[in-house]
Image (tube, rainbow, N blue to C red; front, side, top):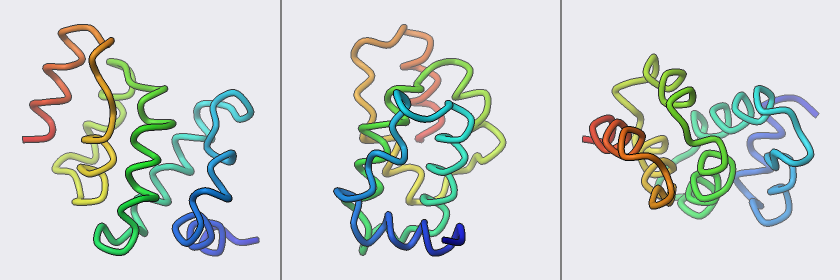
Length: 106
């Protein structure tokens, strides 16, 4: 399966493919690369569930100053990345991470 085929399969059936972005089974770097590749191909209107799932799943699990440092190079964010990041529950994050994420989403 090519990367484009994988991304398309995930976007079409996120409930079937969710495990491929699970940090408990895959290394962080690989998961982040997959998540960002999927998000780059996503159409917010068509793939809202898949994008939201990536935010509430792997991006939420990785949320940290380190992740925000890595995402800084992608700023300003695409609509799909903004949607994914807006689905991250940040209540348990440090004030610094919450403030940085909020500023990046403005």
